[in-house]
Structure formats: C-alpha cells, structure tokens
Image (cartoon, rainbow, N blue to C red; front, side, top):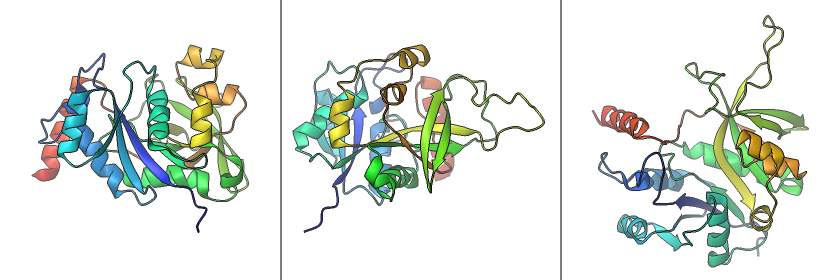
Length: 258
C-alpha cells in the first residue's frame, strides 16, 4: 500500500463579500465565477480531488449544478483558512494529507501553479521539512512595485529548495543602489498548500504583530517560527476583488471566445 498523501484542492467560497457582494456567483461569462476556479483546479495534475467549501445554500446549489463536490461549513469563520480546516475535518483527511487552498475569486489561476505549490512540499528535501508552501512569480511588466495591493516576497535558497524570508506590501528588497537592482523581484501568488496536521494547528496560532501591521496572514506562520516553502513559477492570474476587475475578466473571456 502506498504511503503517499492524498492531495485535495479546496476552494473556499463565501457568499458575502464587502467590495463585491456575491461575487462567487457572478455569471456574466455564462458560468458562475466559482465554476471557472473549479474547472481550472480540475486541470491540475497533482490534486486527486477538488472540493468547494462554502457557507451558503445558494453557493452549494450552484456548485452542485455544475457537478462539483461541496462541503458545507459554518458562516462564522474568520478567514478562508479556518473554513478549509473545518472542511478537512468533515472529509476525514489524514494528518499527512495535503490541502491546497485555491482562492475562490481567482478564475485565471493556471493549473501549473497549483501543481508547483504542491511540488514545493512533496519534492525532496521539502517533504521532510516543510508543512506549508506557496508560490512566487517574476513580476509582470505592468506591475508597480509601489502598489501595496501587490504582495512582495523574498526567499532564501536551501539547497535546491526555496524558503520564504518575508512577505510585505512595501517594496522588498529596497534597491538602495539603483544601478544594481535585486533580480528577480518576486510577486506573491495567493495560493497555499498545507499538510493537514499543520492546517489544524495553524488556525490555533495566535495573531502576531507583523501579521497585524502588514495585514498578511502568512506572516503569522513565519513569526511563530515555521518554514514556508516557495515555488517560483510564472503566473499572470489575478484575483477578482471589485466589480471593475470582474468586468475586465468578462472582457478577457469574451475576447478568448471571439
């Protein structure tokens, strides 16, 4: 019998959203936004299973209609990580099984990014030392390093693997010598993979000062002394936070169909 972990891509899909209410059900492309996310996750090679974790019957019904597996979770979760931890318990996942947190508002997340995130955990030597992983991408030409909405990440190289040193909304590293800029500047891609045992522990960790200052939940992990593996892979996918961003996504979809 194989001792390989079961890898599950989980998509948190909360109905409420402050800047764009009910965005996961927006369907001007002919499909709910969450369906685009789900179909991309299905194209990834690493996960054996794709599950949507939601807090609302309307989202559950919409997802069941396009054939998705859905887990109902409590409404009161403070964040998507907590929602996935409950879903992992409902599914009865083992301690070493891997949960990939695929954001429910990223309809253009490349399947290869999902696979790379998992690889950062299961490829030696990471599989012996890393309980959590994420992805960083070289910057796109249109990206502005001064934009606080774009999270930056710096890494250390440990043998053949990468580990996160810090995440920031500020430009890091700062190029004091403008003639010798740091290369490559890395943009954080909001996808995470966790071993289930760490996912369950993560949600019990106390909030930390840097996490609160930067408003970046992943800093809690670093401040508590845990390592985060980082896969470096090019990604152009962006999240949908506002109606304007959704309109741009609809336009791109229509152009691809033209």
